[in-house]
View 1 (cartoon, rainbow, N blue to C red):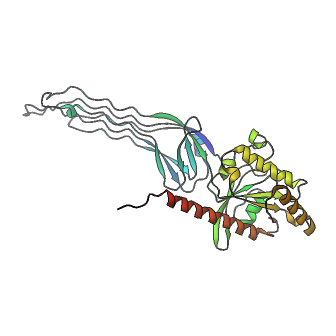
View 2 (view 1 turned 90 degrees about the horizontal axis):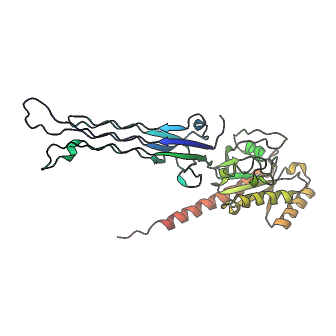
View 3 (view 1 turned 90 degrees about the vertical axis):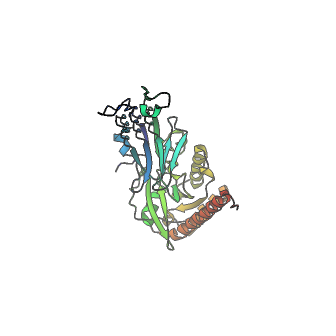
Length: 346
C-alpha cells in the first residue's frame, strides 16, 4: 500500500428540505386547516478515527464528499426524510486543517474519536407550524437551511513512542528491523527509506512503538533531499533516538547537522528528550569507540551510548534507556492532566 500523509479534500453537507404548504381536503371535514409537514435535515460530513489504517491513500482517488440533502415536507403532516451522513474514515493521528493549512480543526488521536466537519442544514417549517389563533390558514413555509461547503486538508502524523533521527545510512532501518517485526528496506546506499515505517519493540516485558523516517541532510529545512516532509511524524514521540554513523569521518558534524535541522523545523521538536547513540560500532575497535564517543561528548556535552544494529551489541541497553524516557514522559503527562482537572467541591 502506497504511503500518503497529506491530502486535500472538498466536503459539502446536505441542505435541509423545504417546508410544505398543504391543507386537509378530506370529505366531511369542513374546516380541515393546514397540514404541511417540515423538511428533513441535511446530512453532515463527519471525520472518524478508525483502527487498521496508516495512510491517506484513499483520499488520493476521491477528493469530493457531498452529503445528501434532506427531503421536502409533505402533506398530512409528513416530515421529509433526513439526508444520509458521510463519514470520512481516517487513520489515528490525523490532523484536520482548514484551507490555510494552519488552523487545526480537529486532531484525531484516539480510535473512535469523531468530529463534525460540516453540519447539515435544518429542514424548513411547513405551514402547520405557523398556525395561530388569528391566522388559521397560513400560506407560508420556510425553505431548508443550505449546507456548508468547505475545503480541508488532512495531514497524518504517525503516533509512536520513539522517533528515529539521523543522516542517511546511519542505520535507522537496520535498528528497526533488528528490534521489531517490521521489515523496512535496508541497503548500502543513502535514502533507502523513502516513507516512514512503524515497528513494535519490546524490552523487559514492555512494548513501545518506534517510527523510522527518511534521513535528514544539511539544508533539509530548505527542501534539500527529502526535506523535512516527514519530521511531523516524530512530533508526537515521547523521545527521539539520534543515531550517529560510527564509520563517518565527522561524527560531531553529523550530530550538529541533525540538531540544526530540528531547530530550523521549529516547534518543540528540538527540545524533546533525546538518546544519542553511536551506531555501527562493530566496525570499530575499543580504542576507536572510546575516542569517537569522547570527542562527541567533549564537543556537544551529551552522553553517547554505543550500539551495533547489525550485531545487536548494546541494543538492549539502548532500548532500556528509551523505555525509561517513555515512562517518565507518561508520568509527566498524567501529572499535568491531574493538575488541569478542577478540584471537587461539594
